[in-house]
Length: 468
Image: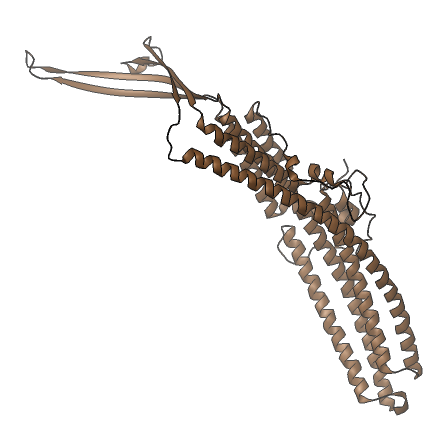
């Protein structure tokens, strides 16, 4: 995919022949804060290998597969080629056009009323010629349109970059979701086993009919209810796993068969990446660069619309031969040529030119506002990811503490129940707390990893899967 896009864009630059990309309009993005409010970290350098940092080689190989086979990326690559071709077409208007032509004719003329009864004459005429035409771009109107098309092509390249990063993030999150589902299935299987053991203990006490130890039919039914609920939760977790596998396969461009290999457990959260300065975001985030290029294109089209008021100058010329014998069409000494020029000054267009100027000016104002919106959203995404990690880490620490406490409580409750000093409700409730805390810890760990993916995406890191 990359070589195709690179070749397409190289064709634009070659076809442009001295065309210059419009100057950057990033200054129209508005005020840029000097530092992030969520953290004072301002070190340069973004982790461009964040896929490997998070998921290692297994996740990198899946992202590579998605980049080769995902239909959305294939469509994006085609859009890049289309934009390059349009820029090449727009740039061609700056140069003369040259064409070759041929003509052939046969004419018969009858002479009536002449002495001798009249007669007729037949004439043949054959010719070949080269024609040239050129609109002199004296005011830069055609150049402005060509540079606008070049900026559009640059914007499409950046949009393709954004889509590639977005797809990598989607694959990463789907992979993490499958890893979480695997852990949740394992926890649910442990919960079923634990419920089976508690149900057996309760039934044994009931069968011994030791009333003073709390044995009763209600307790048996309660333990069996908890067991059935645990089995139901296990099936729900297995369903989540199957759906996650199929969603991952769709992103990879595979048929959703549920056969993809994914991580059995969630990876550890890597150290946080350097956030850099907010101003650096304008230079590396592809959606911001795309919005800026669209603004630059709109500005050049506004110039083009304004220059439509100026006169247009066109030159034409042709050179060829003419003969009455077809076999001498290329060797005939009867040459013909012509030169011509024209100057056209628009006088009355029914408001068409003024309407075009107003439309182009409005489009430029829209592009300015859109750039400002995209920049503001980008800053917000970084800030949200930075602050979300702070509170998710705190939440993880508290849930981890809850897991340890619930394990201890469940162990003590089980021991007391076996010794006949504890009640069944306390025993079952302690098991519930342990199961819920363990499941919550897995979920918050996955949320932390998801948020880290969001942070890398918000910071505009490229997707580099292999070492240079």
